[in-house]
Image (cartoon, rainbow, N blue to C red; front, side, top):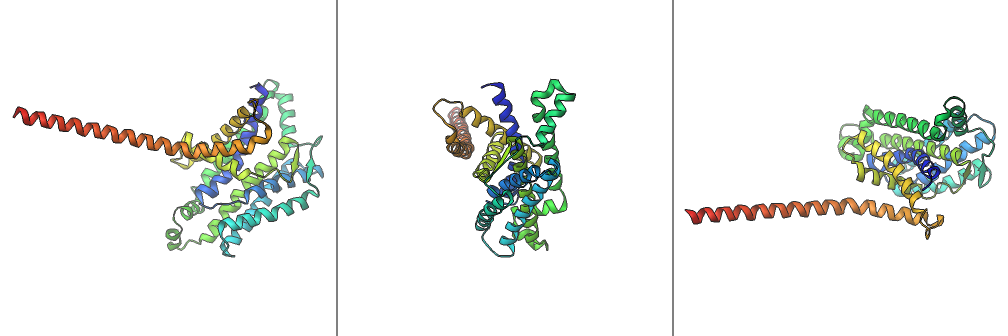
Length: 320
């Protein structure tokens, strides 16, 4: 695979890792199957691209996109907690509604950013002027540092009083409610933070690829889940620090796997969703198969040990 393909996979993987962190917060921390992700990812890209095309600064556009994504998560949380709508259905309703909202924001199905100043054009110019020897990997270095800062903030937040309450809500909602904690609020905060990160990822992806499309968020929830599952399977998730780091690593590995798979002659770009589904299936099955294999080995070892002990006992009796 050419160096450019490796670099492109790493760059997109790092950007997608922000979305994967958002998915991790809902599916693993909050234990909430949030399907708003497909809509809020596009919302982030749509608002950022539209504002940049209108002449706003890329930083302001990205921040506004993150806020609007958080607002989408807030709506999902309110539908579930105050409207008493099933969690899965609340996410689906928000996702469907966001399709129309995104079209309203963009005014059309696609907003190009060719010739516009974006965060990534600024990064490229900075490295070309001041660090030309790192120009090829400037985006990777910058985005990796940014994602690590976001990861540190998420880790810190999950160890605060509110963060611990959110974690407890996902672990045992009845228990934390018995301590007079309002679980409705913790769910809303968790969903808002999650979709804010997803929208941030969408805003960065729109700037990275040079356009925003109304369908760019389709399948994002699967990509997020694949990243979380792959990361946990390979790196473990015994602590929050390790789990969030594993999610970031999983997103990068996922993009690299996709890039390698698409280099196979008989596979086409249209097969990407099928490849993603297969990756998720393998990532789900592999840990269980590995655990089952280890359990069988352990049982076999214990059985052999018992046989050995019985043999020694029989020999001792014979000698006696």
